[in-house]
Image (tube, rainbow, N blue to C red; front, side, top):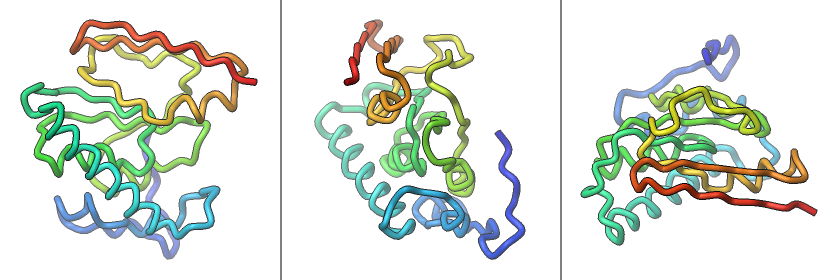
Length: 171
């Protein structure tokens, strides 16, 4: 996905790396959200949340010993999960995926210096299943269950060679 540079007051003026990971970009204001809270506050709250969560994962589950290389964030939001991995010095490549059922936050992800794509999770993701060592799917099912009455979700995690099958029956 390629994001056009805006031709309005929200121009893509980004700060230098790595400060841009924690700095809300100007294009954040152009994102359409169903929220009453300031977009900058949401950006900072997401960043703080994932920084604390990843710091806990590193301490409790010894993530630095796991040698994660390829990670997929299946509901990337503003890219806070990937930024937190970088902040914790976990040297891995993160594919940020923005579901088509939500707001298009790819311009913000790109302005942070991260990569990402939009994807419909009711379709297969065009990659080899064991490409990713870790699939991060926080709150993905809560978004997708609004679209389909019955959602069948399979994630193959090559790091542990386990198959997780989650059935969600919506009312």
